[in-house]
Image 1 (cartoon, rainbow, N blue to C red):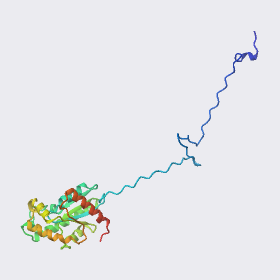
Image 2: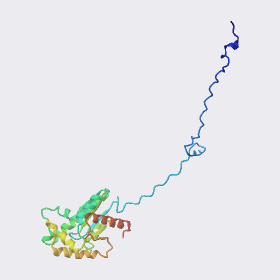
Image 3: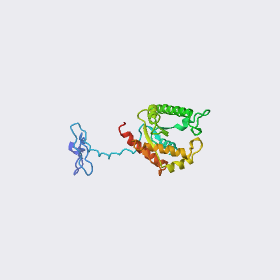
Image 4: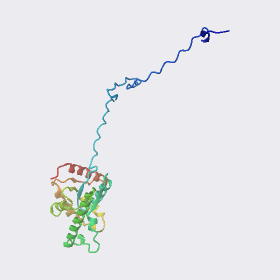
Amino acid sequence: MQHGVGDWGPPQGQHPAAPPPPPIPPARGWPVPPVGGVAPVPDATGHIPLPPAVAAPPVPPAPGTGGATLAVLLIGPAGAGKTTVARHWAATRPVPTAHISLDDVREWVCSGFADPQAGWNEHSEAQYRLARRTCGFAARNFLANGISCILDDAVFPDRPVVGLGGWKRHVGPALLPVVLLPGLEIVLDRNAARSGNRRLSDEEVARIHGRMAGWYGSGLPIIDNSHLDVEGTARALDEALARASASPQG
């Protein structure tokens, strides 16, 4: 039996399957709208503008001297706690800081050491001058290498050429002096706890303390640490230095 051309089609009652539709290419330059929002309209270059960033609140500066490079002279009578406070302040700063103790440098002299307790004379005076020049030389070297320094000395206001003026010549005019002056009773108690040639008689301590009172009215920062511990005194010192360094130097 022969079949015509139409006999090769699908069985009677069925229709041929339609070809699949061609894929639709994605639109270029148009992002898919986000869920729950409307997509931002791109500019002519195809970039999508972003919402403005929220600015963070400004961070207030840390109190005190922070990371400033400073040269400090801590002044006070024997028993005021100069060496202890200076060492603590230097050790707790966030930047390299050196403590240069005048008494330590003076005691480098072993044979021939001139002890003022045995009588103040030209030899002890000369060794103090040498120690101050040595400390000033060391301080300048530290500062030249970006290291702060703090020195301590019993500087009298009635001897400006040898005292504060001398230190500024040795270290530099940017030297920041601060006076540590607790009450006489506190100074006497602290001096009594000292030993060796650093312990003075009560009469000498009272005489030095009386001369130190001349710093009142000088314009220098004065800290009465009679009721402050070492940490509290170091904080007060740092705050006083921050105020002094922010003020124009005279």
